[in-house]
Length: 464
Image (tube, rainbow, N blue to C red):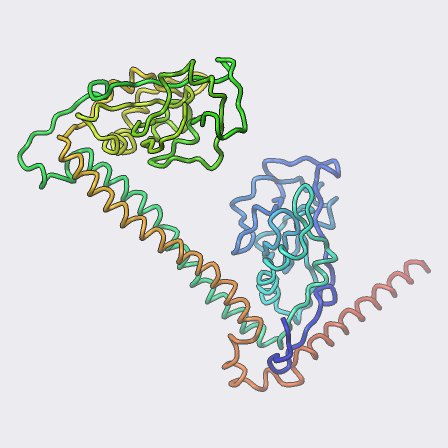
């Protein structure tokens, strides 16, 4: 922060000058100790979140003997943790309820910022620097990392102690409100997912178009009776066919490319065109319905809407419909609906990998309205899904703004903007006597006294 226009009696100081100690943890296994299922909690980066140390997420522990041996990385009340490897910049304030605990070399321990300094103020300021530090200081390697030296060189903005308390309190209030908003926003995608599933359930049960159909009775039909082809692909390796990096060859579609009503081609694979001569039945045609019949993604279905040269493997089933009986989108709605997914999974066989036979796919029954009602169902579903998509996009935009809001609030806090009115109302608390510079002098006196005491103690021991 540039303090040319700093609030009255603020100053700057490097973290290395402020903290008594900036060190990092140790990995127990390098010192000959093993992780345990119970014992002293061992804090890793994944156990640190925006609220601090998440004790419930800790899964690794060490013995009391190991904790005593790893003295440098024992945590103390008031320590500030800062992740310096992998995900750089996660921070936490260690409180008594976290102790005893230990940590590893991916976590820096900032200790001894003095009893005259607000640890919450420091923790939040370090949090405000996390993105900049990660971007400008990170080094590559097995994982991104920064050094303790880099951490010590961070320049902090220091306010008078009373104002530090005020800023820390305001941040607690404001960031709690931001977190509440984020939590509410995070629930909306789940609600929209349930909404889409409800729409599909209503669509394939006939409830969505009861007004359109009138008194016409709905009848069921098996997939084998409304299709001209139900088949699956094969493995290229079994056919002696090679994978290639040439997009002019045959696009090879696997279960990972078949999403729930979405074709996923971020990482396309290709095989030699010769594969199509041996697997002509599984050549894809525009309008084919694809559904996964092997593995964890059983039940995901999509309409193939492309006019390109493509084939499939044995984990994907093609359903080529009789267009006079069923529209591809309607069958896709059925297969992706809770009823369709449950019906398909009910027929799975668990061997090396869960799978569903072509016979089971053919025997699936669904309500089959006439083509005019199927067309109306598709129109209404698309309309409702469009509304849901628009809401989802607004939520994503709002989430992005909220994420930026946290950094904006932190930046304002450490420019002194959050406490401008408070300073006007409390001039005595930010007087020269209580200024940040005065605070730093007190810290320096503490350090000098501690160093003198340590040297005296050492001399006495030598004489003895």
